[in-house]
Amino acid sequence: MHPGTADRTRVALSTGHEIDLPLELSFAIGGVTVPARRPVLESVLPDELAPLAIAPGVGCVALIGIQYHRVGGGDRDETGLEPYDEFAVIIPAVRGSRTTLPLAQLADGEMGGYVHWLPVTTDPSVALGRECWGYPKERADITVTDGPNGVRTVVDSDCYGGRDTVRLEVSRPRLSPRVRDWTMASFTRKDGDLLRTKAQIRGEVAIGSGPSVGTRLEVTAELARELGLWQRPLTRLYGSDVRARLFEGERVDE
Image (cartoon, rainbow, N blue to C red; front, side, top):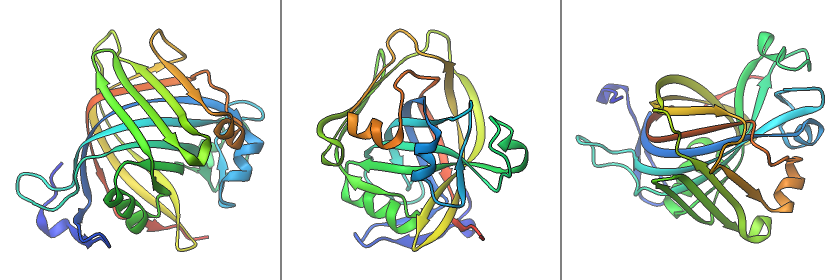
C-alpha cells in the first residue's frame, strides 16, 4: 500500500498543506445502503449517469460514516493532513448503459458511485476534496465514533434542517469480518467536467443484508425528500481498520 516515490504526484493545497497522490488513507467505516425513488435520483445525477436500478422505479443510496486515522503521510513522508471525520452520501450509478432494466445495466455500462454530499470536520479536508477531485465537501458538525458496539455517526448541518440531520448506527458484526481487496470508482463534477476517481480498498470488512439489531438510521425529512429515500437498510457495512489508496481523477469523455 506504499507506492514508490517515483509513482507519486505532490499536490499543494490552498491551505498550505501538501499531499501525495495516490493518497494513502486508513479509517474506520460504518454505512448502510437504502432504497430510493429512481425518478428522484435521475433528477439529481448528471446527464451522463443513470441511477442503478434494483427494482422497477427503485434505485439506492449509500450513507456512510468514516473516521480517518491517517490522511496521507506515513513513516517516510511528513506530508498529509490531520485526521478528520466524514459523512458520505453516494448514489450508485451507471455510465453508458442502454437499458434501465434492474441490474441489467451492469452488463453494458460502467458502475460507480456519484458523490452527492460529503460533509467533513476540517477546513483542510474541504480543500483536499474540492481542489483535487471536485468532491462536494463542506464543513459540518460531525461525530464518528468506533466503539465496542459499532460505528456511530451524528451529522448536524444547516443544509438539511440543522441539529441531528443524520443519526446512523452500524452494529459491530458477531462474526469476524472478511479480509477484502477491491477497486471501486467514484464520479464527481469538477470545473464542469465529469471525473472518475479510482480507489483501491483493503481491510477486514463485514457486509450484511437487511437491517440488524443495533443498526439504526434516521435522516431529516429534507434530505429524505431530496433523494426520495426510504430508511430501511438493504445492506450494511462495517470495518474498523480499513486502508485505501485514492488516485488522481480522470476526465470522462462525453
